[in-house]
Image 1 (cartoon, helix red, strand yellow):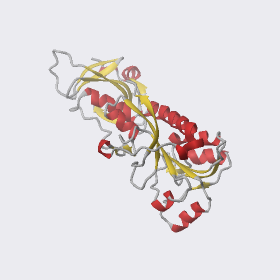
Image 2 (cartoon, rainbow, N blue to C red):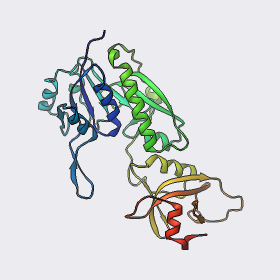
Image 3 (cartoon, helix red, strand yellow):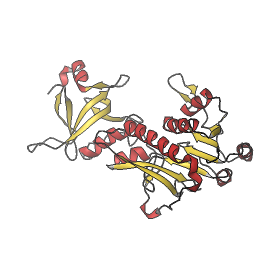
Image 4 (spheres, rainbow, N blue to C red):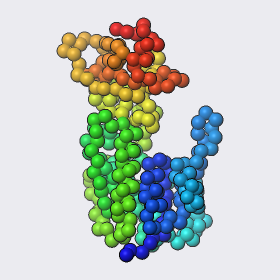
Length: 309
């Protein structure tokens, strides 16, 4: 029987929760949890603990929340925990070499892509934006450079035509936790495969500039953006002299007789609002008015029958 490991878990958002639960349900000991400092959130700007902190406190695990891991005092504190292994899942902070060298068995990351494709902060959304049909999760040894470590295990995941950033996030979080659970007992003996750097792509963070629909782009590109950004950063569009959030949309081919300008609403019915794009039609299915809740287009039209056409 493999000996029990003393594990430090480092993670912050909801994506990391299933992986921490997998460790808590294993024979191994989670001796501490590292997560990012509490952040101000909501209209009241009150401090909010991360999902990982809340789960750790439920299980009476010590929680550490350094601003970074560069300070000698912080590193000494971590070393004093005498970990065999550190598991990192969407932690959001860089681990310096001094930290990577502390655990006896090193540091292992659960990453939401098929490395070396989509290294970086937003692999789920970038895969959707690129129109990828396949993604997955990777167990990886951690090196100093971002997501460049040797690959231990991978699990493939088909991207479905109606997947959003949320649905794919949830599926990959579950898959990552299972991959971790299946390999944690003997992880130090899993063969490591060096990444092919020439195949690497970078998944940069999402930003608000990207979240504005550009009608000059093809409809299929805009549909992917709507799905990919939902719900992390809902895309916006100017229509009917309003700024609307777009929660769901469908790319359609252009009618053969179409002569309307790009950005024109050519049809507005309760089943969708059709907008001309650089290539094809984007049918809006679910929208959100400023200060309102996301609603189906049928409800939007009920409130604005003057837009029917």
